[in-house]
Amino acid sequence: MVQDLVSVTVFSLIDLLKGSFISSVPVFIFVFFASKVRRAIAGKYKWSWFKSGFITTYLLIFSLILVLYLQPALPLLQSDPFGETPVEFQTPVLELLLIALIQLVRLLVVALVLSFIVLPLEFIGLFLHEKIKKSFKFHWALKLYLTVFIVTLLASIFVLFFAQWIISGTLAFIYYWPEI
Image (tube, rainbow, N blue to C red):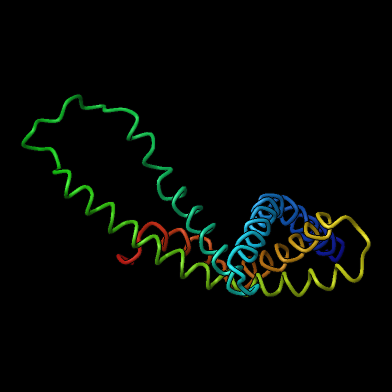
């Protein structure tokens, strides 16, 4: 009985580490790209870390949300299963543009909200990255990956044990806000 509890706990921790490792790879690619963009923005406009980091986060989250939002619609745009739509049933171009503009503004607001939600993770990551830079003599990309892995592990622990609704809530927020 106790051995079963210990083995379940050990294997659950191993699965948590394995899942965090797998999740941290795309996050690392995202952060690696974002750090390059942030440095370019900070150098060009002479902005502080906070301002350039927030703008970079906002732009990249908006890009990601736009791809997530448009991804289900792309197969529909590639084929017309019903043939030619009669003129009286076609949506006017101005109305289509208005709908697209409203959805774009809505996605801009969603990206702003999600950028503020991600900001504490960025602060934790910045703090850990400074500590890791001082403690280890690895290549800078390895230090960045270690930082991303630890923050992904902390975020995974928080989501799995304290706020399971975050993933489904975020997807519902992206696709269905303000109808929620």
